[in-house]
Length: 389
Image (cartoon, rainbow, N blue to C red; front, side):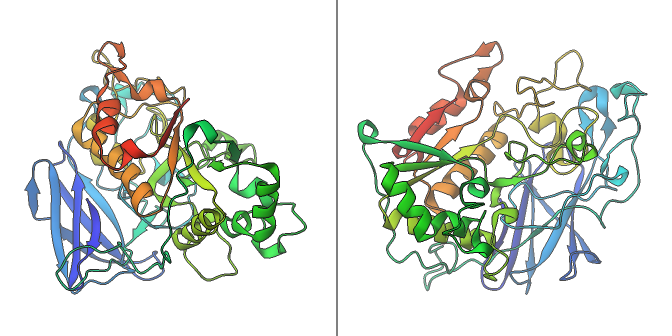
């Protein structure tokens, strides 16, 4: 799933059970000018896919999904809206709240959701886009370590649960005012990994840090209108992307590699790294929210919709919507994200925001829910620490 370079071109794959066509839109190196469009030609088991020969890492792209506009049946397709690939590993752009980001008119509450009509303003100039990252393929054609980052033999500390002393931290807040950390590193992944930061943690006697969310997130429109931002990060849009706002601008290294360098430094000091993850909802909010990714790709599959009012959203998260991980491909997205962070980013565990929401079946919470069963059988995830809020 997502975009993957094999050394000769890039393969694209995106899930949508209800789209009628899926179009790949390619942009110039600035991410502002659309240079080409390609319909993804193949459709296999609800996955639209295609191969772009000679394409290279660094390519910037978005998606347009064609389909029905039938909110009363849960369908909100609008090909005028450029959509972010849910599997994006690097996001390009800075999100702006503009009317072009709305998939429909009536989001102001003046029209009931089932009566809303599509807004055909093209949002490409303002939409968040994905950048293809490089993959390493070894001599037998097998994925090696996904890219060229040198982990230098990094090993997980594997602190026994009974000996774990957990320290919850916000990446920015932890080092923002620490005079012992260089000014240009404060409030960043590198600041958290600085020797002064590590010395402080060791002095505290902790064994493990639990990072508040670092997945790519956007601030709610209500906060922006108040001149505020979502400092805590609990409004995820990109489940495979380290938030670039927490990266040092001085290093010239990608946010992903800065995050991994931080993990490597903490591991070298014997400190585990756990990550707070938010899979109960996305940043697209309720029926008045914007169309940024999941809603436009396949609203009826990605979100839990009331059976008798499918133009609305079940709101078990309190944030406007609820991801429907009863759906196999949505559950796959969550599992793929967790494995990515465990394998590629060397996470030692996860803390799940509103974990009971992840266990909701058709009739309320179930301790044997599909998510818990999937984690329990997974050879990677069953071995890392799991914390349920």
